[in-house]
Structure formats: structure tokens, C-alpha cells
Length: 111
Image (cartoon, rainbow, N blue to C red; front, side, top):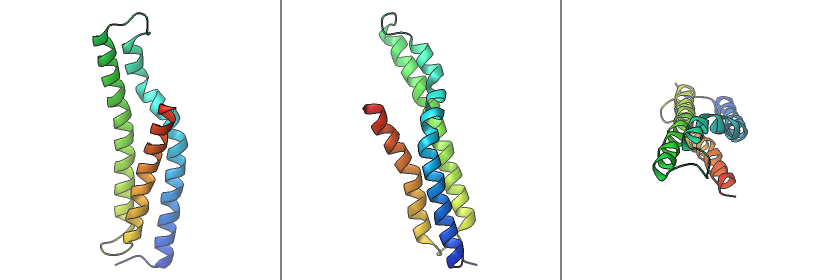
């Protein structure tokens, strides 16, 4: 059983909404997830190189967990909404709703 046209359009719309929400929420959730690692790394004047590397690793693990949990949610949600062979465009939108918030937050972090 495949989705009818309205089902595909509502799936695409909701994927776009998820992507926009993730774009704004990842700024705050990513900072919260990385906070333990940032605290372990210490302040710039009082940390060793090993402490900084370990804190950065813990920070990266926390933020990666958040992004991977979001990716798993999008994949499982899209798989539940779209049957095999129907709505291949939904998978493209699902990919973009996962990767664009990640790219935008990477750009924000580098500025």
C-alpha cells in the first residue's frame, strides 16, 4: 500500500517543519549536550593539552549522540509514513531535513 498524493505532501511538509525546528533547537540542545565536555576541558589559562583533548572528545560524543538520535527519529518516522517504492522524493527531503541543520550549525560554530 502506497501513500496517496496528499499523504506524500503532508509527509514532506512535516519533514520540512522538523528540519526548521531542528535548526533552531540544535543551537541550544547541542550546547547543553556539549557542556560536560566543555567543563572537563577547563578554562583556557588553566588546562593541559590532555585535559583539553579529553574534554573535546566528551563534547563531541555528547553532540554526536543528539544528532544521531535526531537522524534515527527522522529515518524511522519517514519509513513509517512511506511504503516501499512510493514517495522517493520524501527520502530526499528527509535527508535534507537531517543534513541542513547540521551544516548550518557547523557554519555558525566556525564564525
